[in-house]
Length: 114
Image 1 (cartoon, rainbow, N blue to C red):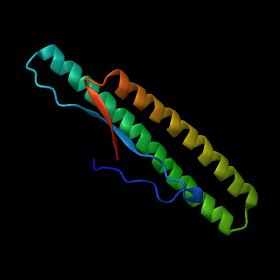
Image 2: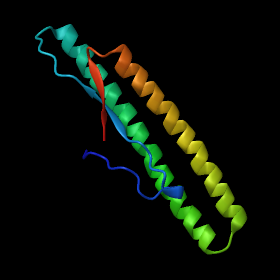
Image 3: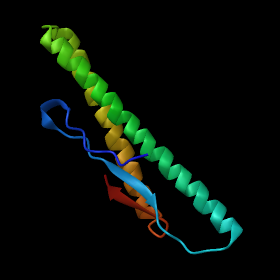
């Protein structure tokens, strides 16, 4: 999977901050440690993908917003804006959780931009 880019198609020019949890390199031959590292890496990827899904949802909602606004559907555009605001709230929550994980597991994972 390639590195995601910042959302350019968001209302009022507000971009969705994109960060990724990445596993730090660890030298070990211990099978138990290797299993833990594998599981942690998979968990990081799941969170990263979850965040990407939100970004895709926002892009779709932006298209919907633009179409409705272009057709003069104020009520529909308002609904789309509310949906975007809700998804952005969820993005903020996920980012805070990712920051906490990186802080609590600094020896094992780091939070990177993009």
